[in-house]
Image (cartoon, rainbow, N blue to C red; front, side, top):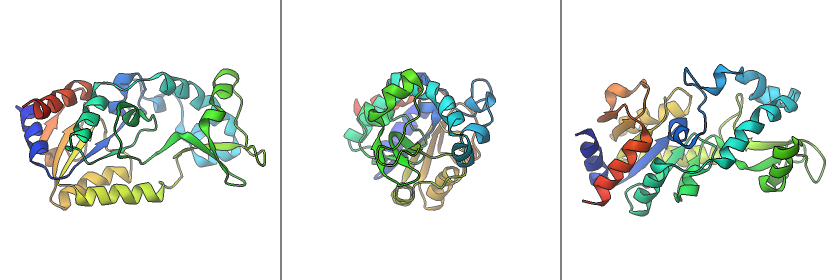
Length: 249
């Protein structure tokens, strides 16, 4: 019944926006950060390896931490949830996807309007001269040899364009995301525990603007009681069923 209701809400929506978190990529083999069992932050203090201060003082710790994660991300393929959302976008049923993930799997699956609110791994920026570099130029050497990427212009260490603790979100992407939230009449939250500020506030903004809310997540969120549809299920199983209900009927 909930799947049918979710499909009906999306079909009747004029402007559906999707907000995704780590839970949409765990079926692709990418670990999340905060789950009780396998979360990355259960193994290491994020402020010691993934904060802006840590990067500036001990960049080698950051690169040693991110190396195995980068290998996992590069090997990962989109799962059924990613492909289903891409199908819905191509059918005009999803107007934008806001993602907290840095893995690029939405685009790999075929989604075109994706706001990567926590940055992405495809580019790096020099902290000294601010020259931007393509990650492809450095990734193989880093993966195989652990070679820390250096600016080709000034030789300073390059920082991947992902958002670390203590960093502000990319302003242009944040503004695009806020605009999408203001314009939506339906927000689908998929695979996010909604614990990271300021992204966690986006669903409340949508509700306050009159939008309906669908939440698909296997752990509780602070806003569950406001959801029109709440599905405590695997996104890789449920979202394809919703897409099929919409597109095949």
